[in-house]
View 1 (tube, protein in one colour):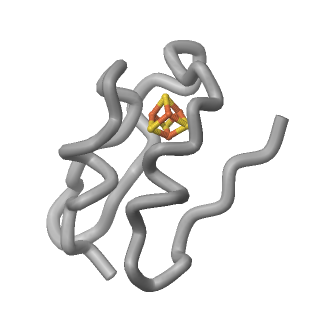
View 2: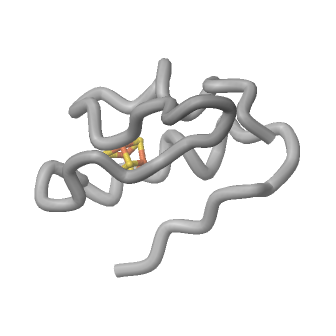
Length: 49
Ligand code: SF4
């Protein structure tokens, strides 16, 4: 959706906006905390181990 909620909530700055879409900037920094998944109002993100 490009609303950037997930970008704002990620505690380790894994995600970033690229134009109007969200992109993974640093996958190695992801702790699988699932905050991005839980906060997304449109269920647009799923975190897999
Ligand atoms: S699961 Fe990964 S990408 Fe999502 S908020 Fe947590 S650290 Fe960031």
